[in-house]
Length: 72
Image (cartoon, rainbow, N blue to C red; front, side):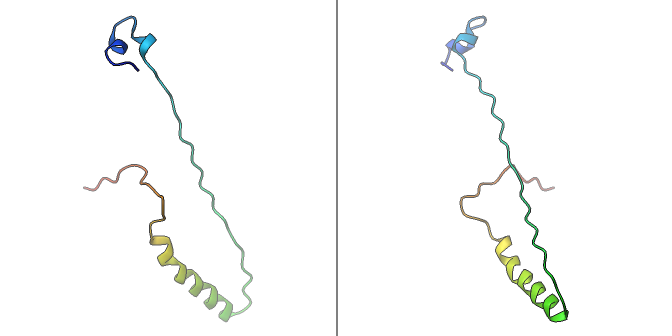
């Protein structure tokens, strides 16, 4: 809004802007089934997931924090 004019009682609404924004986000979870026929398959899949864990812990590019963390 226009400074000073937006604060005039009774007329301020003419010089004031108000926008209501809602930010919508979605969480998408992709699930991939695996057919494991023996212990070797189980170990291979388990190891591949273990290898990916460090990548998940790294911050992604162009990500901004959403909110604040409060610690006591």
